[in-house]
Length: 170
Image (cartoon, rainbow, N blue to C red; front, side, top):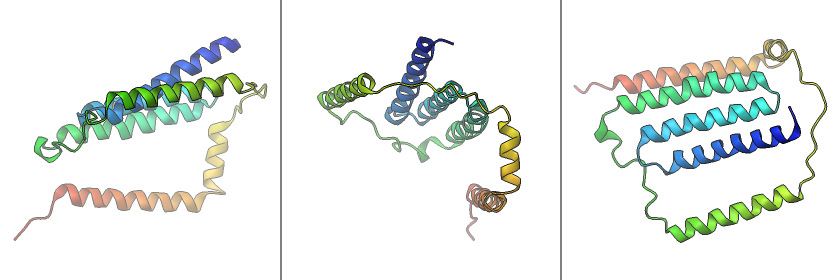
């Protein structure tokens, strides 16, 4: 892939990620916000592909987009409408001139950084053995950290089941 193709692909994925993140925090509907969050995760995985981190891109899509974002969408859709009415504040209170000024400042700073940064591409080959290397590290050097994370996730799952079930009043 040529240098221009990498540059164009980077800007496409970066603009998708930034636009989806902005839409996720500015939408008033929680379901729409969650769907834009999933789109943001897809943009980040595209950036991982450009960095030749294919394993991280696959994990980003499978774990974040496939599990977390979809569970958030389903959880939001299955809750009662009255319980989250008005929880996602609207962005109508922000004056449009302020939004225009901040956006213009962001564009100017971004263009200055792009113009002054000496872009260098690494010619190092990608690591071919990433999954087996990560598996070996997880089972040797970081085994205690993984066990602590597993216990923490188990406690969170038990707590969410208790909260979802509800406490019966006598």
